[in-house]
Length: 237
Image 1 (cartoon, rainbow, N blue to C red):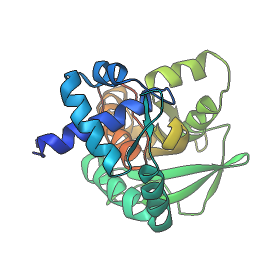
Image 2: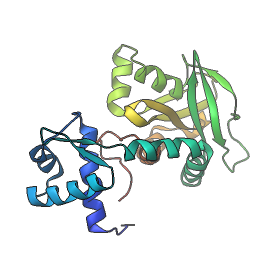
Image 3: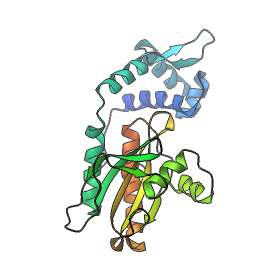
């Protein structure tokens, strides 16, 4: 569903977004080129953003982010509860795929199931919140190792494709597909996965799972302050 917004607000937020592309300070021309706005429009928006503390104009005429985004970020972190954001997305995954969905984070040499929603089926895999599973086996572990900089063709492929598949690795009867979730600074915030009995993870089924899981990983990435790589599986408009 297309969501309508306020054009002026959209343009102002676009101006702020260009600073995520790099560069501590940018000229008005730089901002105009990156945003795609006329220079006159960019100037008006920059002046408004400066007035409210979102941008700061330096003595040389360039702009950098002001203190307000940092203040908002601290408020967000103070009130942030991962369950409020992650669990609803896991429920959507379960509704769409009819398989269990998990969100893992890394803790030293293990992956911890931080959030879990079970499949509404009598035959399903057994994963519980708080479970500590090995990094060396399983789709989620492979994703974590890939984005921790592990070398090798397999991990290069995961970094490029943004997903991993495992069939019977941790448990000979279980299959899983996992995707990375990025946070602020494009650091890996966690891994979202769907898993279930291996016989339900045929090639055809996995081909259906991948774009759905990527879509929800992209939504989580956006919610956690990251930017999903442009692979055509981003959040819906």
